[in-house]
Length: 281
Image 1 (spheres, one colour):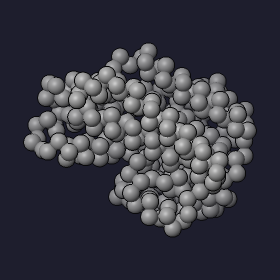
Image 2 (cartoon, rainbow, N blue to C red; image 1 turned 45 degrees about the vertical axis):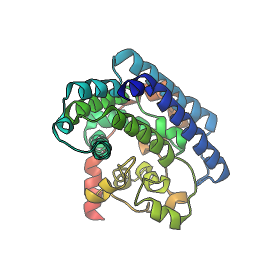
Image 3 (cartoon, helix red, strand yellow; image 1 turned 180 degrees about the vertical axis):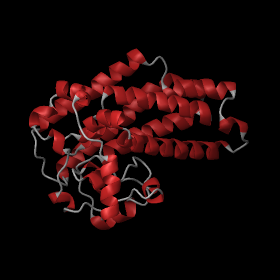
Image 4 (cartoon, rainbow, N blue to C red; image 1 turned 90 degrees about the vertical axis):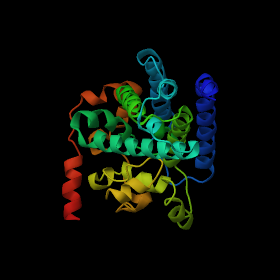
């Protein structure tokens, strides 16, 4: 099984990625949540372009992919879960849950640490919110995220299957919860007890700091409630809220080359502002 997973990891991930990406695009066209304010061609060439650059950067700079390291760890018996006698299915579930928690804390740190926020704000500076926003991350942030996953794999010792399940889940939910899709409020209220929905995550892309620094979850919605970072709805409503950051409101900032050099520009760290705003609210 591990040999099959390692050999077919790229095919499996790309197949799920393309299927979910196309499915969300179709739903966005049929049932959009908001009217887009910027030319779609400009945003899409930049957002998809940076995805292509990220893919190339990872292949050139990172000699391993997470699932390959997981195979090595599993084979050599490294990590906490390899020291505990659990049923395989339970090990899979525990591994995926722990990984999701790690990604939650990673997301919080990319808001809280100024130098990391400079990288992550590339994601938040998008002036609209759709499926391509879910793949818009600075290459350095992607590389740092991969390194964090390596550390988590070495410590946790998950099965290789758990790693590929989590990677597919993370990529899929990122595209889903960034989708500009309209879900009936009653259904959304039920869904967000099981998965991060677009309406839940859209709050995170508000230009109001207390909302920008909430709803950090990507897949499971429980961490935000547990750690008091949950915000149910934006103050101005989903149609009235402003997407993006006040620092980067010029459409020229949407160009691909501007995204790559955006971390070099000055910008305030928003996390302390969020804590202050939350205390005043």
